[in-house]
Amino acid sequence: MSEPLTPFERSYLFKLARSSIEQAVSGQPLTPMDPAEWTESLREPGASFVTLTLTRSGALRGCIGALEAYQPLAEDVREHAVAAAREDYRFPPLQKHELSAIHIEISRLTQPVTLDYSTPQDLLQKLQTGRDGVILRDGWKRATFLPQVWEKVNSKEEFLDQLCRKMGAVGDHWRRNHLDVQVYQVEEFHE
Image (tube, rainbow, N blue to C red):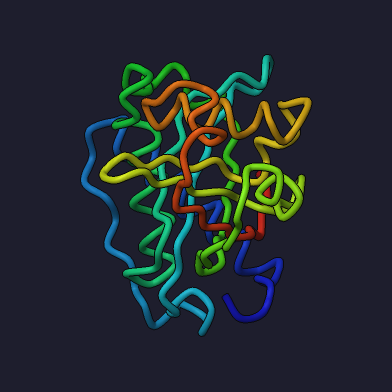
């Protein structure tokens, strides 16, 4: 990630995400995009997560993204907006009557970097609450939490316990096993 996105770029991505979700939920083909309209930042390879929440309650309604950049940021946001609305296995596909009740959040990720640590206590000391998104890997199992999840937990221990459970392991797995840990930061913005 180079520079922060401009207000124009953020607005463009929100319009793109919202219109793509509306088209997908309505069964319409997605409108072709014109990369010539994109700024340099929208053309650069970018990794994003798109999170949908219910406007009234703030409850999660879908969240899908990529941890590493493999396509232009504009395409990445569009792909993950549609996937968050239609393909998040935790929720039924978004329906037309729900379109006005969702709030869109976009997170643009930095490249993940390995966090070297020696003990569970060392890991706790190196994690930066509220700043670090965390990826845990143990063999073929992998899970991530965006930095925004820090707002919903009371401690670093709880954050790692929940992330281990998301990965399909017991909560204290990080205390008893040396896991591959990567961290990243996000540029987060809301509709």
